[in-house]
Length: 60
Image (cartoon, rainbow, N blue to C red; front, side, top):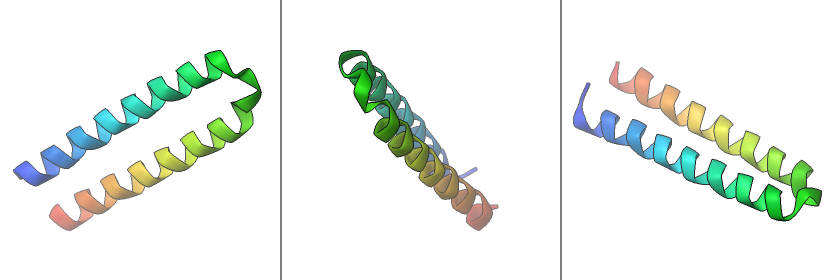
């Protein structure tokens, strides 16, 4: 794998972890936001999956 693909995978992992930790902290402090936050988290995971698949297909 090239360096740019590895960097993209690493960056997606770091962003996913940061968003997950932020979501957990927000849910602990404001439990009423559970619905909108879970929808936003699902959308972010979908975008990360699509970007990862595109990187794999274009560089594979």
